[in-house]
Image (tube, rainbow, N blue to C red; front, side, top):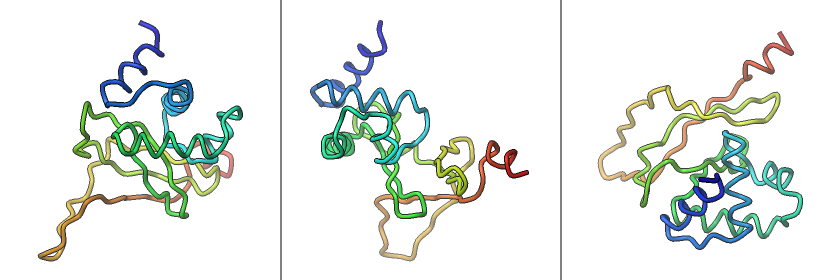
Length: 142
């Protein structure tokens, strides 16, 4: 089965009609294998305008195809959701933002800290971003 066929099936499973633009955005996120900002996606998809990319991302967020998180500098990053069907956000994880290359990385193997809020507070989502320098940039600046 072609990767595009898998992507089409994934969109349909999540209740989204596969269109050319939607498949392009999905492919870009899958190929990057790391979270991407709107600017990253615009660079990767020069044939699509910003509003088209934004509409696709908004739809993907509504249907749990992607998750978004703020990277600590006020920029939203998007990454593919690994849950089948409706997402229960069980794949929430720590992110690392490199202050040198301005890329974000998933730290899926690092356990999340236990979050206990004061009585009466009900969290709907949370984001945990660590800022610093990635190994590649650290070597350059060593």
